[in-house]
Length: 347
Image 1 (tube, rainbow, N blue to C red):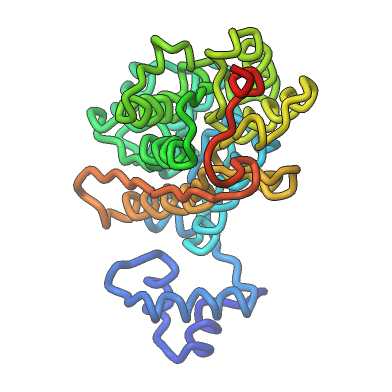
Image 2 (image 1 turned 60 degrees about the horizontal axis):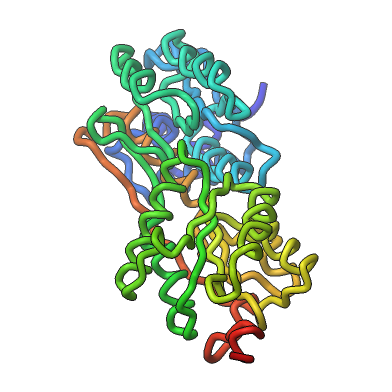
């Protein structure tokens, strides 16, 4: 027999019922007492009887997370954030990996009606809005991550993508750049669309029409798409080439920087580059990548906190959590005024 609720109660100096309520997230228990109980449970190695709890409370004490991948650093950090909160709250975490495949996403969403989870966090890229809206019939708590749908009544967690992209563009404008290219993300991704919207707003506020100037290049959040965009840029006439690039994620920025080096274009002397995400490699590449940091683990934590609060009945009204971004300035933008292209210097 392992440690019991009675052992935790003795350790903390509270009643058995207080420990039980704390472990089950009862709102009548103060945050301080709940924290003491959870710490004692962890210290003693307490393992809750989830099946027994489920029979008593009509729950299975598991939450699901639908996510494209765990090998990509972004998704791995989201999973880490969700798992930390789930563990502290006494919930199992069930991962549904979809590899951004529509059929796999549909199969994962169908699990919500089988009673295996008390609620689900969904990050779906390929299924249509109607498929997500149809989940309302199950009356199971759902939190949408990145792609939010206020009209569905599902809680949502996202970052301020528009504001982050505007930060990046405004930084480059402040350095004197006038022709700032954008390498987009995939059209089906709401975060990519929001970042493109922020880029357009900032460029237009500076008096430039990014579409008319041919400054927007198609990408899909991969290194290869960043490299291919650079290949298209250098085919432009010298007077129409950009002096700076805003890539809609760090992988795209890395691909662009590698291809610029292959073409003999020096970053940042001849081309400034900004990414988005602040992945771990951003600080180690040379030159260090200036990027917009989004709080990735906090996305997962906020989604899990919101879902568990909804499962416990602590939240009644619709909620959307929007996390702010931060511009991290490194060497890939240089400093001072923007450099002109050699051909322009000669003119």
